[in-house]
Image 1: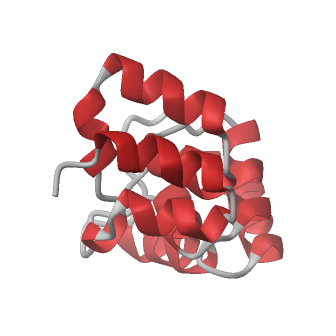
Image 2: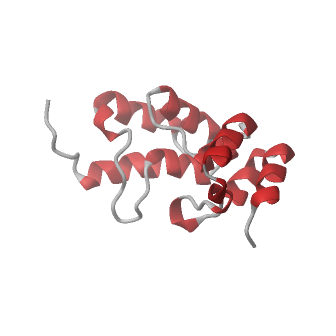
Amino acid sequence: MSTQSPPQELVEQFVISAHFNLARVKELYEQHPELLNVKWEKFDESALAAASHTGQRAIAKYLLAKGAPMVVCTAAMLGDAGAVTFFLQDDPSLANARGAHDIPIMFHAAMSGQTDVTELLLELLQW
């Protein structure tokens, strides 16, 4: 098995697809599973981060099921109050976390439509 990173052109395709195209994400992942957690260097963005900041729940859930690690912004976008609570208990400063493109966690939480997630964040948010 190669330890070389996949070419950035391929990573770019995967990450761009994760913004909107589940079928293409699946196709690329099946052909190149090594893409799962690689970041597109141009934007320091993984496929999971792309799905998270665009509210692509199905894509995020697919990537998580394949082994991408859950991160607080993804948990917020998915409306997973339990996971967000876990992250915040471990590190309260994550109430100020920013995802890809420096997008604040509150944006991710607002996309979930789950007010309990936004309320959790508001309690700890450092304005």
